[in-house]
Amino acid sequence: MAVVLSFWDGKFNSEMLKMKRCKDATAEGLFTALIAELAKSKIPESQMVGFSADTCNIMFGENNSVSQKLRALIPHLLTVKCSCQSCHLCSSKAFAMLPTLIEEFLRQLSAFFTSSYKNKYEFAEFQEFCETAAHSILIPGLTRWLTLQPCAARVLEQSTSLQNERKMRVEIMNNKNKMERIRMTIQSYKRKEYLRVPLDQE
Image 1 (cartoon, one colour):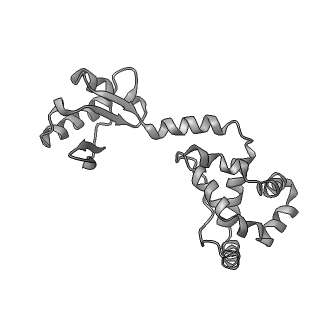
Image 2 (cartoon, one colour):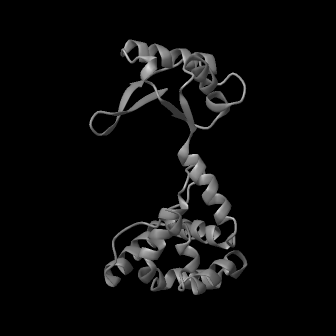
């Protein structure tokens, strides 16, 4: 369990208090471990004003969670669910209004380069020729939140090199059964409106 303190000392600070191994991963076990670490560091409960953690049942469930136990002990405590997950849920709802082709395109495009060292090497040559940054095409994460934004930004950054990568375009054109939809995206994404949507959600 990682315990991070955010406090005001003339300016806003955040510091790691403890990275603790917990044998008991229940709400009671984590609550007990947290209170023990605060007491060990001589941090009075009266000075605690807020608590935030991952939005899971153990931390924020309606029954017998860590947040409930903390509020029972510290009535004035403000508990806030994970802001990263909240942003991810909002972004996912907005992104669901776009064609699924966009996310599929980002995954297929990254797979084209990650599956072949030769493809990556030839792409690097096009980057040098087009004088674009020598950056890799990113892979949208399945377990990482808000990963479409950097992936879309990287494709837009590398658009000149990608449009000139002859081998990739030829392979996509030839393999119609598997990648016809990706070929259509390659043609239409020059307008870049859809790929800019994740960037507008920052």
